[in-house]
Length: 486
Image (cartoon, rainbow, N blue to C red):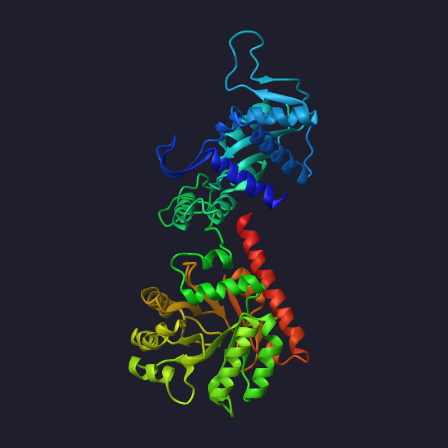
């Protein structure tokens, strides 16, 4: 099913107020931040046809086998009618209640016991309406194995129906809806988060054997905050200007690769930067291991950054009191603040280390990432320490825009996560370094940038290796976006 068609439909549903955001009291008495009123689509023939076509296509995509179609009363009845009329399929109508005159039937239409009937529904929350219809059909001797729904609220209906032998196939999930409306600037990030929290906290299906901390049962919920693209995150109000620049260039170049240039010669490093520049978004240096350092080298490196559109990250790992790091950053032999866009720091000294760096870097539009986790075996940067790092970053977000970490450690989309120790195959080097694959880092652990050193520098063809890491990292990122939007 074409993603463009779904996004177009979602926007149209929002246009006609079939989807509303605010404060609504549901039939159950629960206060909800979202409300679906799909009955309004009966006044929009073009929209009715589009919805019906997508419902039919969903069944076709799943290669479902059925002999008749039944819409759950009432909103799904006209949808089922259009599907059956257009594709010449037998239709059954389920009444809400049997009449006390005439045939007194609750199912209207020609029934062939043993046939399979496909159920059509507009919205599923608990799945009870679908189940009620299925039970009535089954009482007439029909088989019910599948149901197609336009909108799955992801509140346990699918799990409940599956437990009873009915597979629910949705056209739109709540996650897809929120993601699309956010991208189109129809809702704020805070509203998307609010809806997701509501969905997660109001699951309707409680399978036996799964107890929460209060002793009640609950099923895991698939709804999660909509994953934003790099470009979307660059536009957020609270995103640091340097982070926004980085996220935009990542989107433009289609790369989330940071090359760790651990070299001891300036000329070799410049040659590497020039040859790999098109493949990367960031070049990471260890300036204090260069044996022939000069400020002329930094000028050449900056020129290459402009030529190939990448940022420079000096991996200095500042870890001293504020006054000391201020001088280390601004002065001395390396004058790091004059040429490096990004630096990093340990949080161990306390907030003074950030304040000292910020005093130098902010006027120059620089930025800092804090070290929240490390890829070395036995690292002490875990647990409470990592949480303290996140708190420090949030308190100093005017200069700190992200983290060095093995995984996503903050849910705030304005923070950028950079992960070192990346190779195509997971493992270690015998000296404590632990490696993760690009897919593990970006797709499974939620990081944003892969930092690759020896995987590229040790290759016989560095340009080819960099291109392969770039492709692997970007594929993992697009996979993450696609998984979230389904």
